[in-house]
Structures are given as C-alpha cells and as structure tokens.
Length: 99
Image (cartoon, rainbow, N blue to C red; front, side, top):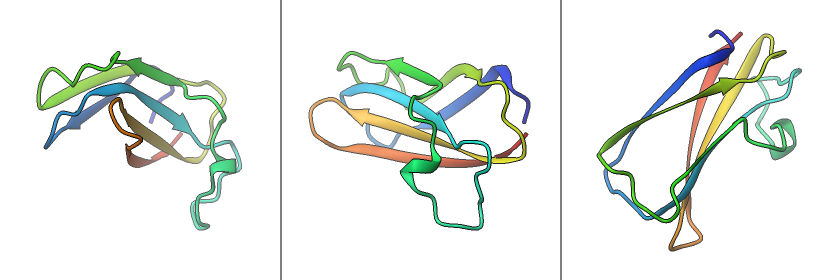
C-alpha cells in the first residue's frame, strides 16, 4: 500500500444507522502482527475522521477517502470505527496493510 491521499475505503451496510462519524486509525511503527492487538499499539488520534452529524449513510455503500500518514513502514493495521449516533454502539473493521 502506498501512503498519501489515495487511500479509499468502501463500506457496505446491511443497516444504515444514525451516524456520528467514521474514524480511521493506524498502528504505530513497530507493530507486531503476530501478537494480539492492544489499544496502546494504535496511534492516539485518527488519521481520518468523516463526520455525519447524526445522519445515516446515504446509500448501502459509501466510499471514504483520506491521506495515510507519512513515515509508516512495514506491516500495519488500519482500524475503521463506525460510531453510531443514537446508541453507545460502534462497529469495527480491520485491514492488514504493508507499506
């Protein structure tokens, strides 16, 4: 995977919930994919936040685009978090990537 502004994420929904936002995090350099993931291995701030202001996604599939941070090397994980607006729930999706 290349870093930069060409990072696109497509999401397909089986239900379109009222949405606060989508957040995308990367692991820190030195991440070891052979060990269980902990929150401490993720960058503290998302590299991309897509606000929805309580609206549901407009269709069953959305594509979101952002810039992956510079300086990442080797194997990493991208964690996508879909924060639901009208409950305390969130949905999570992980992608293994190699820079």
